Length: 312
Image (cartoon, rainbow, N blue to C red; front, side, top):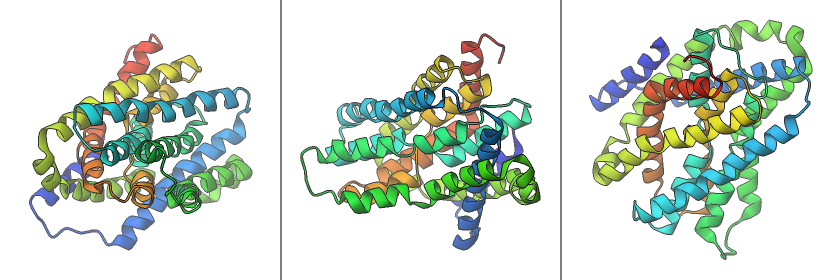
């Protein structure tokens, strides 16, 4: 197992044991910025080396995943979970959107195995941040006219994750392989070290959701473990159909099987304030994120390999 994953386990154990281990918020913000920029820069550099042919059609196919997943999640949360409309829509938005950290672990997983992936994957990461959030809000509001769409869209499109990812993509694309060489020691060579420290804090945050998990119990635990694999299978199938490589198909499966805990909570807080944020955050960060980094990513790679007819 990749050693960076054990940093998450260390944070999880420390949090559950009520250790005084803490990461200063400013350091956590810096690590987040470095990860987002590194992913964007790497994608932009690769895009500079590759033609854009077929990218529009691939992008539309990827966007369809973002619209489909919340429509699948909502009735499950409503029917089986017996959540109200607002909480069901919030859960749908979180699981339709994506986790940058899970994507970063997927990138590290492929790098350890010398498996390349398609250069447009960071772009697809950006594309999948938004659609599910909009669908989730529409599911919660239906005919309501109370949504402040201007403020909401500003929060979504100019939130930290989108700005840094898109900015990194643009800088990497404009600078090209030669232009970013001076940035390589900070953003590329230190990527796994930054990811390890980020996952340490993620473990501490995930442990903080244990109380909500105990209170809302069985459904959230089962939902957080059982939902990601079929969603990832949808992503892998779409990736295979649009001609992505094994690595690209794996990462699209990782994105489809992940759940947001940055962009979605911020947007839902503004648009659906009556939703209980602890429910969606506990499922996405407390259950699905650990499941994905320990078990899910190898499963998604196996699915991608099977679709491509190669051994996992």
